[in-house]
Image (tube, rainbow, N blue to C red; front, side, top):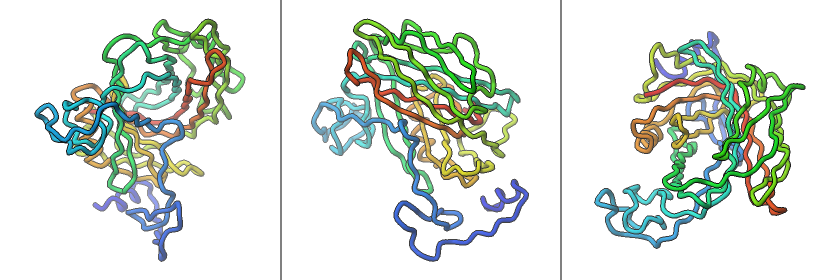
Length: 337
């Protein structure tokens, strides 16, 4: 059955598509199913991986006997860069950097019929540690960019920032947050279901810490995300990524794009695709294959979600040096194999 016929039957409605009779205007591109002019994709603000140039010159020789990268770019790993074909920043030396992010996600699990709230952050200076990073852009079957990023701690420990008192605030309620010795930031107790989704806004408030790694006080606020109804997949067992499942959903009104993500449970390997909010999508085999190469046998999950994101640069000793990302999302998640 053709993909659109399947989607139309799932929605129980018949829609009339009218293709673009003229070339799409700037900022638009034709949708490969309908032919209508739709917005060109953009990654959610604040979530684009940072591609850092590596230190070594181009290496046109064999890469550890695995591949030849043809000298496409500076690969940072000397002559042995792990055989990535020269297509990405492959985990060679990178400049240590501050890292600050907090994510609040409310998501349903259709297989178990449960709803879970995931809230966690990390606020660290990576200087004392060795971090393997890589990032690459892979185009999907609709010509839209997906971002595959890897972040692995390989030696040492990052230096945590002192945040002082921290909390989430939404709809007149609040959730106290507790800092860990490793720079993690987590709720003191599980947040209630609907805490963010039903709120007009949700804020991350940091009172500020002391000492050379004391982060200055700040507040980041975003609108609560729209809920999303996913029609498929509807697995009765753990979901297979190969072949890639067809994803269909009822488009939340007034929303240009949603996010489709595949990530390892430890979030060391993350594939993020910004998807037009038209109700139908299928991950390209190239994106799934690239993810599986990086993730290996690690347990992973597929998530379809709406999200709102805010960013700012926090200060330490009066110097604005710590980029902070605050993400709030609502979605559906499936364990995959």
